[in-house]
Each structure stands twice: as structure tokens, then as C-alpha cells.
Picture (cartoon, rainbow, N blue to C red):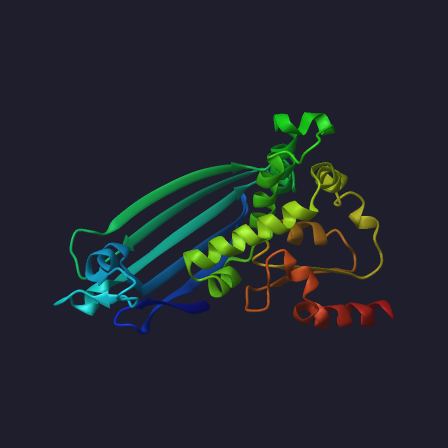
Length: 296
């Protein structure tokens, strides 16, 4: 169970009044169907008090030189500046072997609980095909190679496809729970995105990025696992987008290692998606265990 909350403010009569919003992940489980493969079932409930932009434009007087404060129009009710919203969804994902995945999702969203007949309901269906274990990185790779400005690597300026690759890299390394907590508003999220892209564009070369991705694109670590005799500790976090736990690959492959153990870290305030591998506080106890085993 994960829960988080945030706040945003709007000037009403010259002061900030925070409008809290909150969300809670109320269920997540993984399962395996013998005839198909691993799957997951997840649900989330969210509720909050959201500022209504149309109401702000209608009820709040725009600031001016004579009146720099944002004031309510005469007779306006400040409670009408925001509405109570409510929503939830359920998502089911089922793998079929190692390369195919089907998903179904049901969403319900009510933007204003005080009004009738404004609730939205939606069914979504999807099918994913995984070409290899690094499909998401392969998308970044293709984003550059299929860009005409890349010129087969002989470009004089960074191709625009590099920006697309960086977008995908950000998605692959993201940790949704932490992003929601640290960037609760649209403005914060957009600033983070702009800063991230500008920083990576200033230090990333398209060809160098391709070399880095291509170095492991066709690497298959599953070959020869049964030959390993040393203790092996395989650790992953449940919010890792690059190594999604619902595929069940780690559990299956670690069984081939004679002295191997797989540890799935649940999503928490300490995990950072794929970046959890650099947060030693999360997994150091397992490293200590591995070192003790190796010393025997």
C-alpha cells in the first residue's frame, strides 16, 4: 500500500490557500498462470480538491498596476474556485510467453462530485510485443538511426532524434511514485522535463549514445547460468521499468544458478525505479549477506 499527498495554491484575497490533493495505490499483486506466464493486477484510487481554471478566470479579477493583488469579484463565492474530484482504475496485465503481453484497464473519473452525469468511464485494451529484453532501449536506438539528420553517423549537429531518445530514456528510468510526490503540479513536472532534456542534450552525443545502447542490445545473459557455482544475489525493484517484474524472467532464470537467489524489492519511498541500483541503503543488507556467503 502506497499513499502520497500534495498541495497547490491560488491567490484568493491576496493570500495563498493550499488546495490539497491525494492519491493512494490500494492494490498490486503478481501471479503466474501455468499455461501462459506471469501477470499482474493493480488498482489505484485518487481523490482531491482541484482548482478549476475556468472558475478562476471567471471569478478572480486579473492583477493590474493599480491593483496588483488577485481579488475575487464582488459577490463571488471562494468555494467555487475549486471542485472535489474522485477517480479510480483497475489494470490487469497478462504475459504470454516471453514476447507477448495483453493488458486491459477500466477507468472511472468524476471531475466534480457535486454534479450529476459528469462521470467518465473508459475501457482500454492493449497488446505488447517484446522483441528482446531491451525493447525500451531499442526504441531510443531507433529514434536516432531513423532520423534523416543522423546522416549515418556523419552529422555536424546533433540530430533531433536524440531529443526523442532522451525522452524515452527518461521514461525508462522513471519512478512514478517519487515523481508524483516530488512533482505534484503540472508546472513542476514541465520544468523538470525541460531541465532534464536540456541537461542531457548538452552532454550527450548521438553516436556515443548509440554505442552505449548497442553494446548490450543483443546480449543474452541467460546462456550458461547453470555453470555458475559462486553465490549470486540478483536484486530488482518492483518499479523498474526496464526490468518489469510482471514478466517473471528473473524468477525463472535465477533457478538455473545453483547458489542463486532473487530478491524483489517492493516499491517504497526509497526505491527509484531502475535507478535503485545506485541507492545502497535499499539493498546493502543483501550485499552483506552475499559477502558472508562468499567468504565460506
